[in-house]
Amino acid sequence: MYKLNIVLFEPQIPQNTGNIARTCAVTGASLHLVKPLGFVIDDKKLKRAGLDYWDKLDITYYENTDDFFEKNSCYSDNFYFFTTKGKHNHSEVTYPDDNVFIIFGREDAGIDEQILHDHIRSCVRIPMRNTLRSLNLSNSVAIAAYEVLRQWNYPDLCSEGKLTKFP
Image (cartoon, rainbow, N blue to C red; front, side, top):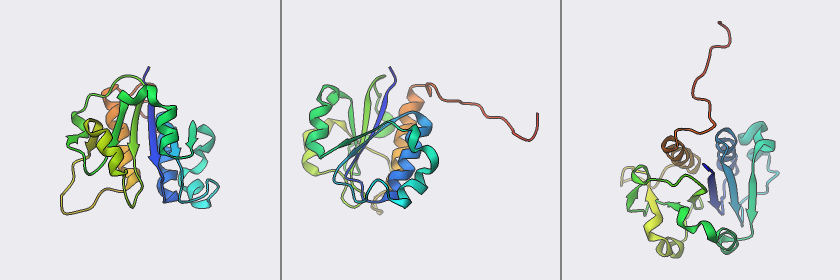
């Protein structure tokens, strides 16, 4: 119960993927990377953005989008495609309690329109001004992940901090 999966179709910018990996580590989400990637996994920029969280990640790699869909077909009702072309506001969707997949496309092209067409009812949008292209990918992933987690009441996450220099 309460399994969040963050899926990146063909990410191109290592710093974005590193930031997203860090978001996955601190939230307990699984990261799914769909090739081709625009960088190699040992890229210094990728590791710097993800800092020392790489050993805390659950990462699955796929050869292409067909491979991803084939291996996760049993969860297809829980796929949510984040796109500027979506008709539904991401925060108006009620996310199921288990194995939710929030899916994002390449930084320069988004998700292939054929995929969006095939899953039109599952396309969601983060509201933004119409005059600008889109949010940064890692920011979009964080917004989406925390909306799902908010609806789940932040399971297994610490919701209270404490000062370190004062009792």
